[in-house]
Image (cartoon, rainbow, N blue to C red; front, side):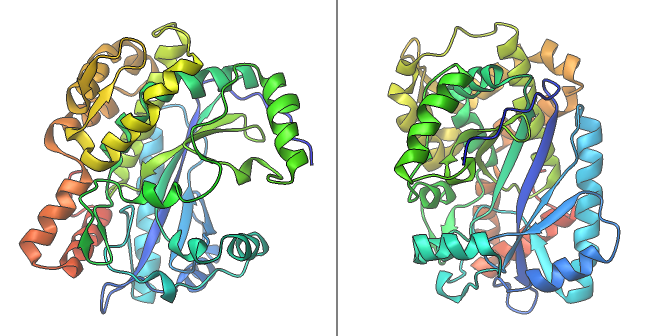
Length: 376
């Protein structure tokens, strides 16, 4: 089917989606509880939107469209409180984190929905292994050309979001030595990684997408697992590299960091993006996944090696004017603190060390989501 017409949105509006873990409070393993959770939540007013995810151990929540950090954070707090209350009725814990530290993928159950069954039939065991948890951020764009400009201009900053959000150090009770092991699972899918380079929407729609559709490989934008992808039906770009943070405060701050960066880019803050910028993209992405804030990135224009932690702090400082214009000053203060203090992966490793096991790590994540702990 033809690609949807790009719907013009108000520039720099934003919305957040969070994929969340459903945890048994008896053994702290994942539990196939999404049908019961969804049935309970649809019977009461929910302060956002909640939908199933590919396996029954996950749900996805999303906010309304917002323009300012204060309003976004307020709704995320309301969503969190509603989820916690529903979970308490079902004896189900809810938390963030990009991976569950000891769940077995073979025990997962595909949610009964036609698209999920199609994905499972196509990708086999990878579908159940996709029980991983991410934060997606949408930024409104006035046109497809603006969307592609922002998408490619952000390539240099993608490692910032990986390192800041990283919360998936453990898989099947083993420390992976990665800050974000989750993105390794995403990379197993075809059409993941970086987007096709073009800055004109008509070339993307009538050239690249039309050719891909003719191959039969893709039917819609949902078939692309890119790190950032355009969403023409919403009039947005969608950042998809973030692990789900342990707190909604961190989630709101990351979203507004992206919003502020986009304003900076639209006001000529960086030089125009170029295909050659992607020469160092996979290396920078790996550094952020493996080492988090301790990683190094190579600047795509100058080839200078930069400390991720120092580059994030310096970027946050130079965005102060744009943060003020977006109403995101508090969000940028949060980002600077997070870059200095450490990400959720470090917090989870500390919880493992202090509790002596992966169960203690999950318990710490549950408490952090409730607002009782963590680095949020």
